[in-house]
Amino acid sequence: MSRVRTAPRYGTHPTPRSDWALFLDIDGTLIEHADHPEGVTIPEDLPTLLMQLQTSFAGAVALVSGRTVEWMDRRFAPARLAAAGQHGAELRLDPNGKAVPLAIPSWRQRLEEELDAALQAWPGVYLEHKPLSLAVHYRAVPQFEAEVKATIAIIANRLGSDIELLAGRFVVEIRQIGLTKGTAVKRFLETSPFAGRMPVFVGDDVTDEDGFGAAKAAGGLAVAVGPRPTDQADFRFDDPGEVRFWLASVVADSMKTEAAR
Image 1 (cartoon, one colour):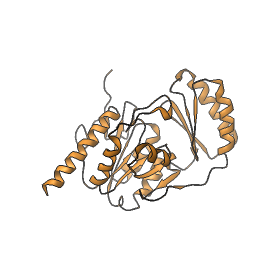
Image 2: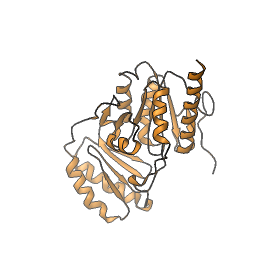
Image 3: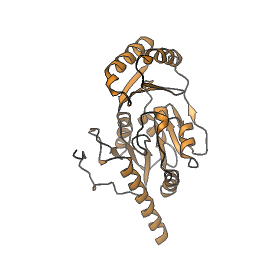
């Protein structure tokens, strides 16, 4: 299988700058996907790497994910970063502060109940329950994709006009309209230490397109991971392993520069 790459502006991998603000998706970007959301493996050195990145970019590093902020803190401990969870529905601008969630959507409980019942028709399909959004995963049984998507759409359309469905890689994200990874990035860029820096968003899926757009609109870069086509990417990595290798090299270069001063 041939590699899919977007022609880079500055080389195969982006050349880091000290004035970057780095925004990182998690699943498919920092870590490999798994059939079940809780089945992912966190590389042992990843928490340390994230803390080193914080130092390298003077704190201007944020996790921007569909995961909850609580999940990020638990699985990446002892690392604790600025974070946007559930596609912008909760935001923690200060790593030492609390995540601020938006109000629970009015449709949330009833949609969860109806999907719980309907999706039992397809063993292997998993409904991920998040406080402010939902995600239906069918990575383990992709043959059910068309039926699962149709069922979700019927139920969601009946329950609310402010519900947005976003189809990703073997997952359908269900969220409130107007909340995206892009709105989260814009909020970070209004706040220290992110303000005035060049945003760089790294992500792998369709939910990251809003983050790409926000970064590029602010004069930054979009870095895609994996083979999914996108017209926004300035650079592309093959997989999370390559992303982690690159981030480690960024930290190493930063340490060399600091030691030479």
